[in-house]
Length: 168
Image 1 (tube, rainbow, N blue to C red):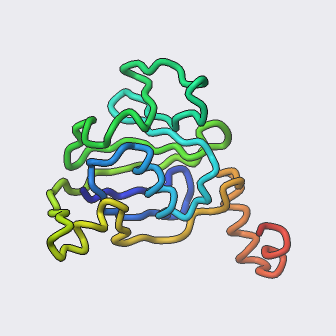
Image 2 (tube, rainbow, N blue to C red):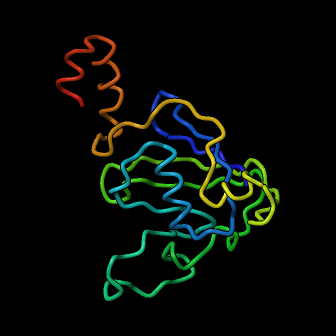
Image 3 (cartoon, helix red, strand yellow):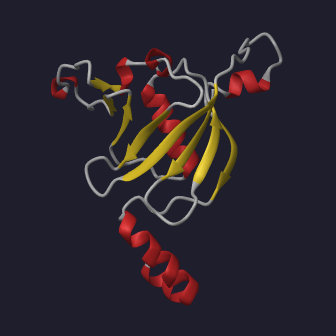
């Protein structure tokens, strides 16, 4: 499937168009999004799709709460299980615990790609790991609050040397 991932809540158009298979768990889908967007990946995340919160699983099974129909761990459900259609939209929240960066995810196309390991089908093998088709701009550092992003851009435009000292 082809999806567009775009950062919400800022005045800059940070986005990626990705091709991935829907036969992966949401944990892998999250890793693909985080990597494609340029995040470091150490923050908690969750998907908000079809009235469900699909969240990062805990490191320790003892910390795992019982899932419900509205609250699932991302390693318990594949993307295909939520039956997404072309045009569907949902959210990916990176930094779900503290100053979250919210991303719109839009399903652009659903199509089947042959992933035979015998066939010489580079695209078919690649979608298992995600392919970035297009994109614009890099996401800011993980610890930056969304409200600070515009200040950082303004600081860079006004004094790139001070930006390197104060914002990197």
